[in-house]
Length: 216
Image (tube, rainbow, N blue to C red):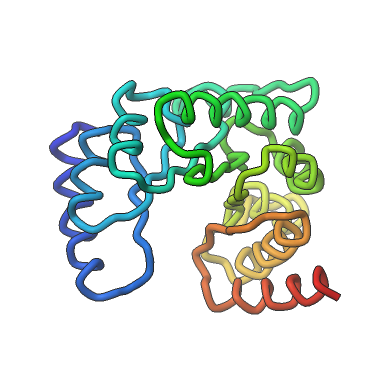
């Protein structure tokens, strides 16, 4: 997306939300100029799915603003990431990538305590890879950084719950919403500190039960 178009789309939304809500606002972008202007408009967190690789200036923007940054794993790039992704050990390789991304961020002046990591469910992974990552989330605790997991309405959930022989379910199907909650609970029990969701009320219920189980 061209820079000016992205700015025209996101800045009015951020300004409007910043006036109405007190929760932190995140800007999801690969472009340093967008991140800089979004932070000035009221965002307080940068989500970079390239883990600071797409724009060499992004790390400097985050460091200068002294805001948290989410570093996500993705094999390939958005246009190619689902073209037969292959791993010998998906969790080990994702962990190694995120460890290197953290070191790169620190070297650029971003404090370690400002870094959040995301294994990138659905970004350059098969359905099996996604399930393995969720099951093996405790292995990512070695990164010693808050872990964000986004499974909400993802294709692997829609595929797992489709009728036998039928097409994948649409993202807004109530069954997909219910299935997402199982992944939210599994992520929380696996050590996720944050989850990215569409259905906030349902996720709060799932997390309340998962947190009670984890703390029992």
